[in-house]
Image (cartoon, rainbow, N blue to C red; front, side, top):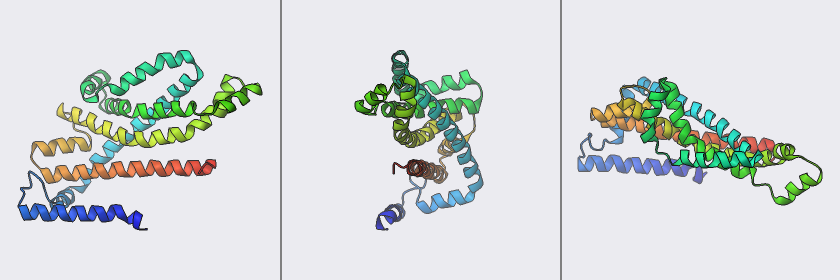
Length: 251
């Protein structure tokens, strides 16, 4: 019980200290707003901020779905064919190390559709953990089990479907939890780039707009919503993973 309450206790103490120090030192709101001002900024326009949050989360979950399908499919393709492994792996690594802010403007121009371009940008960020974790899981069965399948005459495809894919499920779920947060980060970065180009969409644009106007309480309110959304995504995907593993009999 104490462990469950610890995050709330820590957060309450941190907010109280923040409020007290800002008031005691008379820090201007345009530099660091007090938590009370952040709450007031949210209360002034809750619908607008929540609608923007919903737009960002729509991009996030669409990108996570695409990344999950592509990551799993490409990892399985690599496990099924050495040629596919040699062809795919270098490009997957190159995609991981490519800085999104550098290519996001090009993607937005090339894709054309605003929503689709944001999803593509977020997918690039979310893709690699799913791909790498799934590939690791597919290679995780011990050699003894692989030899046993071969001894009983199981071909490459049957060994892949009956041994390697089931073994990769926990790894895939772990990668999904990591990629959930990265998809949100990718969506925010893409929205910031799109917002600076005049395309108004999502909570990141509200942050950009508030910073231009020096409306720091509103900007912090948007940042708090993003942080809460990230926490909810992480814990939600973790809970889904635990539930699936329990139903599978592994937890």
